[in-house]
Length: 119
Ligand code: SF4
Image 1 (cartoon, helix red, strand yellow):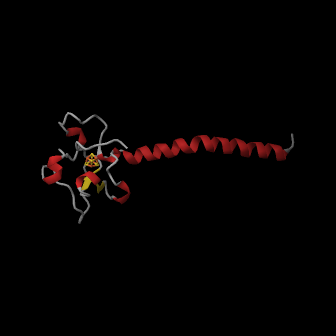
Image 2 (image 1 turned 180 degrees about the vertical axis):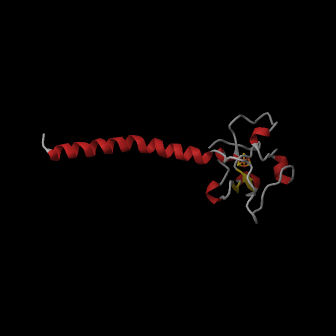
Image 3 (image 1 turned 90 degrees about the horizontal axis):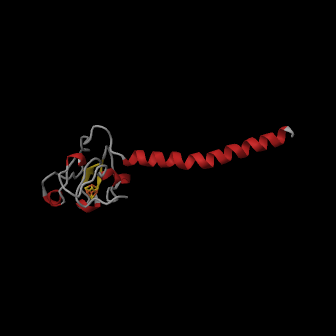
């Protein structure tokens, strides 16, 4: 076996390894983004229309700022706005984002309401 075929073999080994490892790494990064940040709820970003617990739609949807404190029987452990399909995290900032079900009012990523739907 010459040096050139060894280099080619090494390249293919690296390519196969990357093809296997990269999708798992990207999935792990995606899951990390779906998890609420530490210290939830964070301070809401200034100037955004933030949903207020017990007021208007937030009251109707039984919204709480920390999903772990919800007493609604529909709430299951691990459910929060960060992994809800109505949470528009691409438009959010500072742990808050607009929620489609909340009339685009901003909710915290660790919140929860009874319209929750898993992504
Ligand atoms: S619909 Fe989803 S993102 Fe919106 S407040 Fe309820 S749980 Fe949070």
